[in-house]
Image (cartoon, rainbow, N blue to C red; front, side, top):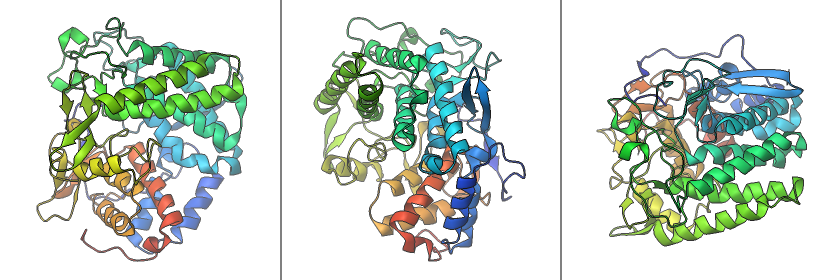
Length: 462
């Protein structure tokens, strides 16, 4: 989001839900009541009650009829703009309840319509205003428009929009969102991915910013560092909104393979005579083959693992970042199974001190993955949540829950990042994605590890 020095908070004051939520869902409220009754640990229960509905409570701006369609603008929290990635992830945990709540389904459909308009406006932009408005980044050296909040090319942004549309269809079988505008947006999204394979030239996208943060602008006069076109898709920025070092971001390319195949399955049903489905599958196959050829690295300790970024020349960046898509999140995004051998090797690397962005408290009670976006040595609750979401080990899930419980700094909410030796020193006190993702984790625990919710978690993260 914004530069790492911004949105720093230190507090011991617990949050409560707003008395007047921005959007109400009877199905979500019923789920909160049902799951809360299963949680014996008071602190964990309070976290769930505050976090799971946080997107609905605080960030949803919904209208029922805009040009005959529902319209939904979802802000990230303390930044009043819609990120394609964040908005999808924020509503994702509510999808399983949409069949029970028509208003909730209409809200999500409205977001798909809004994202369609955003992609048609500019497929390279990552964040949008609610109509023409001022942005602190309006003087960036790129093709800015008044409706754009920020124009950082992040491959995962388009993938998330596809993921939400596919998930909505699977849940609702509602074809109303797949109108002609949506098809045009998907054509543009796929064309942009192909363009950013950079097989013949650098493509039209350039970006520089007048800034003292190195990661907030692109080198080489805005084109990014050199790459060798090998079939992978360049992503100039990571999901953290930080600039990539090597242009092929491996987790986002994995995500693109999944998303392109999901898009093809939607097109098979709704536009069977359009050639886009064939192009989606061909591109997915090409990217997948390139990942296998260029993104695997032989590590001296962990064996064959996935690199985080590569350039096609043989150079690789060995790390992981807490933002999703991450290497840790690959099973969560449907890239592979949680017991895939290559993933398990990579996971052991990620959750070790050999990952330069893995941090621990001095007493070893809190440890997890951080991000260059918030500098060292901050841990991201998102990494702990994803670690638990991708684990089938009850003991590991319990440990993650305990660490999350002790990470909130007394606020009863999740945050962007925290200091492992002082969780009350955190960034972004209002970060709806992390809050709702925590709610998704608790629902998964209630389904797969219900006994964990019926015990009092230890006072310390053992």
